[in-house]
Length: 419
Image (cartoon, rainbow, N blue to C red; front, side):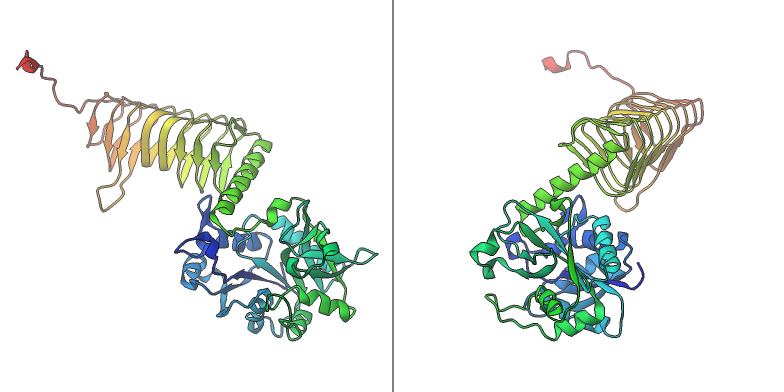
């Protein structure tokens, strides 16, 4: 999105998390909350992003790396003070700046775009995101005039009893005209109950100058929920999990139990695929159509499943390709593996892909039958139409059409246990 900058506020201590880690680097579905906030801005079309860091800033920088510019807020003196730290990157610029909170990680990119578009189309110098809550306790209230225009924001601790009855709250997400924001930042002060510099005071300053301001109400008020403790971390994980599951079901995927199905970001699943309960599918996974996954399946990163694949119960696969019509039914581990078309992998099969130093690949051709309780010691390949006998430990390549038997001869010692 041209002429738009984002500022992500990620400097707070997050003491209620009761953690040695920065609040910003705790994860939801495998991804740090601050990274989610930055990626939401990028998905909204904003490439120029400034992160305001402070407490345990090295941890935040290790996550975001060089995807953003950094400024440091040494003292925690409020949101207005945090935005002031980014002035060096705003001076001389025109256009819009969006202010986001690093600990509000499940805001939809479409909501950010809608905020910017309203600000541009209505020629507003400040546009804020608001929400309606039946119980707005703890939030700043939106003050509107008789015509519905935003006059200002009153924080909970500064609000009178009448203002506390207002249900429209400030989501803490803003879109500002850059030159006018810079002017307003020079005018805000900390003359309030907290002794902090509120970014919300910018709205009043602009209104007093006769500059047009406005607000857009978010349709789904769960989007603006923040993470302040580990209870809220779990709540947001639950909300995002259900949102992702609902999106897949709307596209034709069958999820039998949304409460026990965990699907991470960057996953593709084809139509009519069935996801059974207690299944986890991690990022960078592609699953074809008409597959059957689970129950109790763990599909890890970099897996590619073709159409009509079955992944059964208590199966874990990682960095693995499975060809059309193949079955990986139960109690199996496949790591760094390629399975061809219409194979059957017997119960208890594992790929021994790690020797303590390196990961090695296992290649299984088309129409292969792997007997139960087989160990495939990588690097190793099994040719097309081959058969591996149950209980084998395969250390050498198996030619196509061969039967591989790799187990010791059975010895029965008569009456041994009587002794």
